[in-house]
Image 1 (cartoon, rainbow, N blue to C red):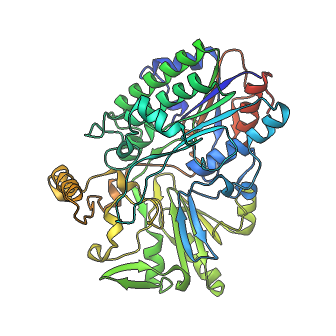
Image 2: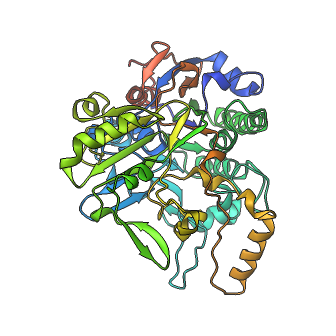
Length: 470
């Protein structure tokens, strides 16, 4: 087998590879590039599952980054156990072909309890006193103290939230991707895996904050190009071939769509009050949406409303398509976890989870970075609320309260969805906005356009040392 490193450069597209990214452009010129028709939906958990199983969501069950659990009547986002992915993984096949095959997952998702040999993933600790302590989870356990001793603590605030992709007390703008890159090198030097899966999220942040056409992203392109260049050179010295990959392309948006507010006005959403705040009671609601970027899963507890809900969705501005039974099958998302309807946004639109009509009644977690409690993805977490004035001073005060042992709420996230300028999840019109796979010069990718599930074969063939067949 040929040892291989797969660098997952989140947000990378052929349209971004220009003179701002000289190292990646040189890598592309020496090898072969294919545009990847995005997974559906084009979000992290689904795309990675497509790539690592060769199957679509209908089979592997990862219909989004989160979904409604019908048995528990709860929405769960960003869960990490590998068992949620219901299809065999690439390491299962390669290990059958060669018992000496080994695999490392460095910050790819569904990293916990997978059958890879080495894994590192973000995982805070939650003591009983209400604290949230930033940390990582590793397997085997002994990696955790060793890698933190050698590399320092993982700069968790830079992984997601207002400090991600910007210079802050947590570190430089690219601190997270640099730490992950060093972790991948550490794994290589210590363990020499056959397949090293490396996740580099740096482009994800400002492409969503500012949009792909904003000149400010030039700095981000330059920074990730330098990191990738260093990794390519490092792995080259180790005799490891490199493959570049991305999960989705981010397109410019200017239209947030609040489906749950639409359903609330129809009387279909059940709201309960807790401590003068509003929460959705999912089990008691007739209809609700679980929003994830440009795709929203719409669940019906009252199926008599099916026709009415379909009509409302089709009439809602910003909704481009609505998938029902046949359409879900055609899209590869016919799975029990999926919504009764799956709404797809127009390319310039995206779906929020917002359901309150009065910001004063929004739940307390709405103004915080809280990816697990929110019943939908919230890119507003990338911002500090401009209404706060000196938002950094507020953060400093909150941190001081925390240090002194007081209960505190890091309530700095805005509720204005119009701040978000980039999104993903739907299939962009232009192939230049699609994710890419780029091989080195000795490996050729058949065709200029492939499906997301074809990436599985390309990774496998890299490792097996064959010329590739999709």
